[in-house]
Length: 196
Image (cartoon, rainbow, N blue to C red; front, side):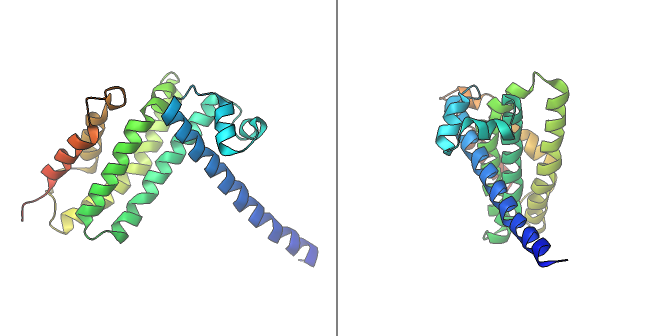
């Protein structure tokens, strides 16, 4: 490989990393705008908040559906990546599980509008829901299994039951100011704990 090829190859890596970071920042901003204003928020609001032009958004996400799906997937990835970090950094596996479930609740409540928009495309929604389960069930299982092994929680549940139960407690929470899903989920999670 010649010097010019090595220089060209070396220049591509930082550019790709910058482009990836910029896209992640754009998705973070879009998620924030969607939570604040709904998924029908004008794309120009997202562009203004992100400090980019409309063309930049449309270059990455040609349609609103593309942007909504990308935001949803980005948030699923953030929730998935948080699990191992919480397990490594928490005082106990139960503390990590509890904190991760709180993040999961936040994801479910604030991103419910994203999922509702996607339901109109049944095949697309099913694929996205499959992705959601494929990414998050193993994370929940890892955290739950660690807490079971540590003797902190009852062992007669499955990670699917936990995620389904938490999900059911979150249904409709985004539209009802009188209902605090996180408080009810906290009661549910406390009920999994073995008394010491």
